[in-house]
Amino acid sequence: MSTELVEDETKFYCKAKKYWKNVPATVDGMLGGYGHISNIDLNGSKKFLQRFLRDGPQKVDNSYALDCGAGIGRITKRLLLPIFKTVDMVDVTDEFLNKATAYLGEESKRIGNYYCSGLQEFSPEPNRYDVIWIQWVIGHLTDDHLVGFLKRCRIGLRPNGIVVIKDNITQEGAIMDDVDSSICRDMDLVRKLIKQAGLSVLAVEKQENFPDEIYHVFSLAMR
Image 1 (tube, rainbow, N blue to C red):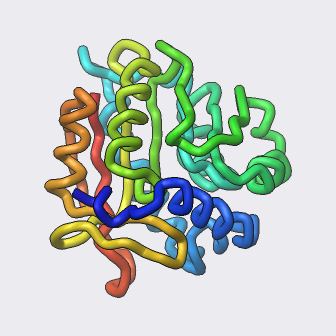
Image 2 (image 1 turned 120 degrees about the vertical axis):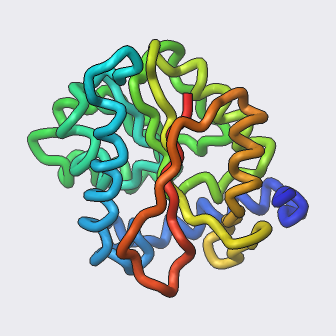
């Protein structure tokens, strides 16, 4: 289990919070210097999400979405707001959320709430969201806190709603990044934690056309 990598939980979260405080509130900052992959990422996410918006008994509604680890709103602006009527944003760094209004421009009027919180402490409002999007942020949660957060996400979903995790996945085991204080897990462990949270995986897709030097990135949809 990756929790064994976290010797001091308080230090683990404080170090991550401090790291993000020093990151520029730009798209390049949000992507750790990989701003040039933003379009590729967003196009892949849009294609993945579209399959759940098609007509059918399991169709996801397009009323309300939640962007977790939202930063300045890169995903909110380009992926979620073009589809959903209202989007809530949650991020641990208040400077990013403060910058979001300017970054989103006119579309910021369709932001329901800005929540400044770590996901280990955040509870989505019950029965509110059609999609809860969690990208490049599960590494900042211990195993137990990730399971707990996903359980709370379950309660936050509307009928037919889905949770999507999009994140780096290792080939095997769990690896700690001491720079930003995060854990990268393998697919078996991620699936195990999802199952513990009482969610079922509906679809898994690898993001194509990313640089070779970064961990493979996968999207997982669940309900």
